Amino acid sequence: MNNQAMESRMIFVTLLLSASIRVIAEDPYLFFEWKVTYGTIAPLGVPKQAILINGQFPGPKINCTSNNNIVVNVYNQLDEPLLLSWSGVQQRKNSWQDGTPGTMCPILPGQNYTYKFQVKDQIGSYFYFPTTGLQRAAGGIGMLQVHSRDLIPVPFDRPANEFAVILGDWYNKGHKTLKRILDSGRSIGKPDGIVINGKSGKFDDLAAEPLAVMESGKTYRYRICNAGLKNSINFRLQGHTLKLVELEGSHTVQNMYDSIDLHVGQCLSVLVTANQVPKDYYFVASSRFAKRPDVAIAVVHYANGNGPASPVLPAAPSENSAGIAWSMNQFRSFRWNLTASAARPNPQGSYHYGKIEITRTIKLTNTRSLVNGKLRFGINGVSHVDPETPLKLVEYFGLADKVFKYDIVKDEPSNGPAVVAPSVVNAVFRNFVEIIFENHEKTIQTWHLDGYSFFAVAIEPGRWSPDKRKLYNLQDAVSRHTIHVYPNSWAAVMTTLDNAGMWNLRSEMWERTYLGQQMYFSVLSPAKSLRDEYNIPESQQLCGIVKGFPKPTPYAGT
Ligand SMILES: *[C@@H]1O[C@H](CO)[C@@H](O)[C@H](O)[C@H]1NC(C)=O
Ligand SMILES: *[C@@H]1O[C@H](CO)[C@@H](O)[C@H](O)[C@H]1NC(C)=O
Ligand SMILES: *[C@@H]1O[C@H](CO)[C@@H](O)[C@H](O)[C@H]1NC(C)=O
Image (tube, rainbow, N blue to C red):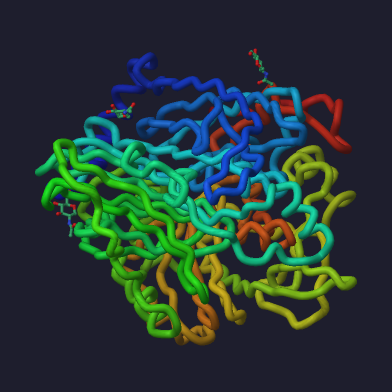
């Protein structure tokens, strides 16, 4: 019996068990209480108002196992509205709590809200962050890691320990100032530096605060996310190689790398074996495709190690066009390990994605324009704005025609003038779609889709045309939830739209997101059944034009 057959059999047995013994079917709950406050930090030597969770930046780690129920009671002690999103966690049937302004009313200052979601059939590394305004520039970010259940084999030995590493570019200006700049129609410009878990290594007592402590001979898992606003980041560990084992929730073919490019919004796991002379080593993160790259360092310490890290930092891969070719090749080397058992969020059999007939091709181009003299970004010429009432609620209460028009974004880019409006694309439940991202700009792009993972089948230079499908990886593309697109290049992803809800498709580069480079997919299940979508949570706040509305009759079914 191969692994997949074994896995299906295991699932079958589990189903039988859970059908007969209901008690066992209830997956464990993990409870968190988070106080979100301001605090001051100065990773680049300039004090800045940061957003802390329980006093920390990065915020507390959520460490859980596939199918756990996560309950997070969030107290907003800021002076402005707050929403947290769980980037990449699929929120099956539950866009109600996806944490984007199009799905939920924000948590007002002084109030609290309890997120409840299940990490159903997922594994891997994710991060949470605030979606409101430019708060992501100030913090409110942390790691969410999902382990495989005990019965499911993991394609590598249990590491001796795990380290959470949140990378990101950093602006010395506060998030309110950054928002004011964007509101006035200007760009926020280049970041001031890079941080590794909230430190740059320039003003920190490096040896006293190591990023990780390893014992000689043991192997460790580093879960690394780029939660910044703009810059792609290359990371490397002096003297060590990195074995890639997981990328955005999928176990990969385990290739070795000297350094890896991690684009905004992406997370992965590498294994590092402590097989060097026991002393300190620098973990280095530097911005990619920038004229003068910013660099941050942190120390990885060997227990019983003796001696400081060498001041000679490992070099970054080259910049310019050779650097892009290098990076593109690295993307092509990322492959899904098809024989590794793991929770598979997509429906059974969808790993044969290469054989499924495409029912819709949606081609999206990032656009940049001036509207009334103000900078706006968009998708196919449409620059999204969030209406006061979340789109999901407006649609649920049957008021969509009062607030937005479906399908202003067409499946093909248009050349008309930029339109500023709420942008919702109607999608047919369970359609298998191909989305092409074409980038005509000189800067790299990264895209993320909430509620799904997709097969990232290609990133190639030039323009896309149907004959480029012959370049797709239809065998073992990684199932993930973000994709980057190099300058003057395209990328293709495929997915089954089987998760009913209102789902945000967005640039992960927050200046662009905030100024309109995002949209929503409305995926409605015609059945209105609990099989397809959960009911609106009882505690869901209603705001804007649906404030005070009675909740409609709950969906039927199980
Ligand atoms: C994280 O979760 C895993 C699996 O549930 C467990 O083995 C591990 O001890 C946990 N680690 C921490 C730091 O809680
Ligand atoms: C706010 O917190 C209290 C307990 O601290 C809890 O009982 C209540 O349900 C929370 N409110 C929401 C909307 O989650
Ligand atoms: C894929 O996973 C299998 C099963 O866990 C493992 O034995 C194998 O080494 C992995 N293959 C690669 C190429 O990483």
